[in-house]
Image (tube, rainbow, N blue to C red; front, side, top):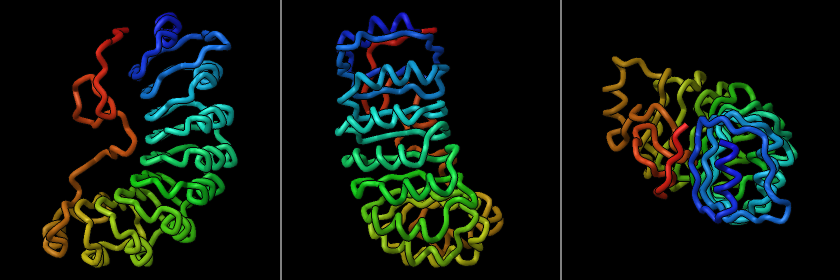
Length: 272
């Protein structure tokens, strides 16, 4: 795949989708400036050195997925130079410092969708995310942080991101029903993920009827199947447990079989 990329990237390609590929070592010409805007490298086998080289040449990225990769602070610094970045998926990534994550978020002021779920983050990383997330973000997946996401972190997040329409807080075991008044301040919230937030009791979920715009709710692990009809009745305008996987900032949905990513069609396909 590395030979193909060294030929393809300099041609001015705007969209490239090559997830789960094996990318060997290569170097781009130092003076080259890539035109790539939409890039999916999810679950690739690739070194951080190669990623650093690629992103050192990028200034026009709008959509980027690096799910499951080992990253570096240098990569975050290079991404900070992409002022048009609107969707970023770093789900399951590692190798980043809190300072690098915070600096990137400060720079990318047009970010709309952000997926930082299940990264190798501690509470310092979480504080860097919620303390620097731009107000432009409307969809956020910050699930998977168990005891590293606190009620105080949620308070900061709500204050900084008042326009959220989609929020996934699943697997945050410190959150309780006391978070509902905070979340209610997100007046445009349409989707909420609270799966396996075990300190939120099933009986308290009925209070979510106070969220006027809420349309979908994921509470896997909190509500027994036999109790779902009762909750459905209490939240008659809300679809409950209809989506197993988050789509936030991801290039394709789980059931998508075509060559599109973020709505952009890829005309050329590499088979490997």
